[in-house]
Image 1: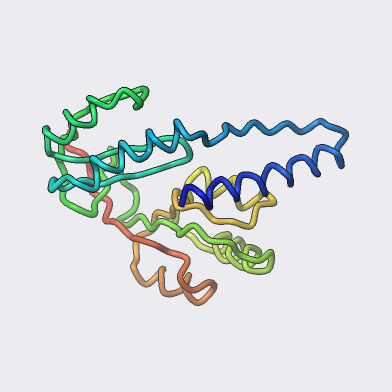
Image 2 (image 1 turned 135 degrees about the vertical axis):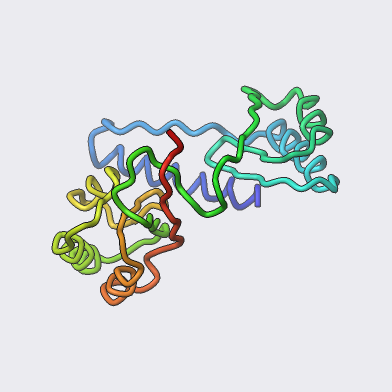
Length: 190
């Protein structure tokens, strides 16, 4: 995987260099090289995670990794790694049922999240037209911005609040498999 990342970064760097030439060097792109030291650090982390019997969830985004676990021994092992920077720890308090969202003053019963996917301009137009015709729904702020923008990739943080599950069937007629999950909205305790 690391070798693929190094190759991908080289291709991406070449694209940015071509773009710089096309736009008169107004674009800059900083990429941090994947060194042998970086590879060794990744292997140190992987050795711990692959050898543990503890339950954990690993979420990786760009150059950050988040480890979620209830196992203090695993956290102590990770804390011993000097190569990990900006370590922070927090304890989550689960105060709501699974697959629910708690809002202070909910106006809707359900929240449905989009999948990350690349779509065509025509598909985006259809989605936008469908959403514009719907009454009684709430679009997330990021989804509203995306609908008026030029990007053709949906993000997994786009959501729609709605009151009827049948609304999802209507949306699937416009674009199938757009929704990745739906959660019930419950009122917050006052």
